[in-house]
Image 1 (tube, rainbow, N blue to C red):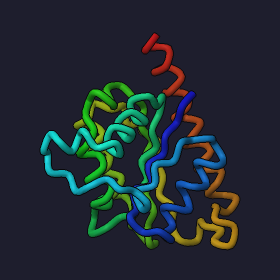
Image 2 (tube, rainbow, N blue to C red):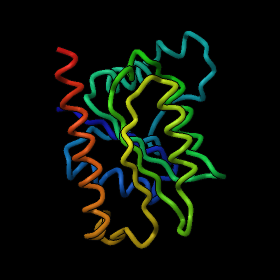
Image 3 (cartoon, one colour):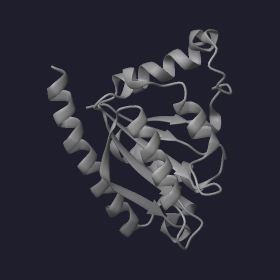
Image 4 (cartoon, helix red, strand yellow):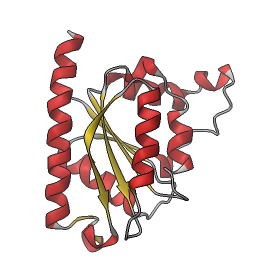
Length: 175
């Protein structure tokens, strides 16, 4: 089963990157890290789709059985970096594909708007955005070990297990 996780944060040292790397290592998901990406600003011009970075990105998502989108909440929405990357994709990569959502918040009530904006874009791409979703606050992180503390790690495990359940059904449907 091929899982792909997109670190939707443009920050090199952000918590979203910590969560994305943790999931990639723990669950063997391919990591697409937008903080290190050369994905250009989306213009809708056809020549952008000829770029190797865009072809590789689209291929990774198309071949995935499940996708995890992660983002910090910026001004009540997902990051611009994640939205820009998703603009290069279409229903060709996402129709019926299960997608899990994870937002990283500065604390309090943050994160829900990022989840909602990711869910809206996922629906527009015809993805099967699963109902289970997760927000991680600053206290959830093990900063010294570039990971998560025990309780949030269990919440991530439940999210990934549900995604895998849907991904198994999706893989069977493709046959």
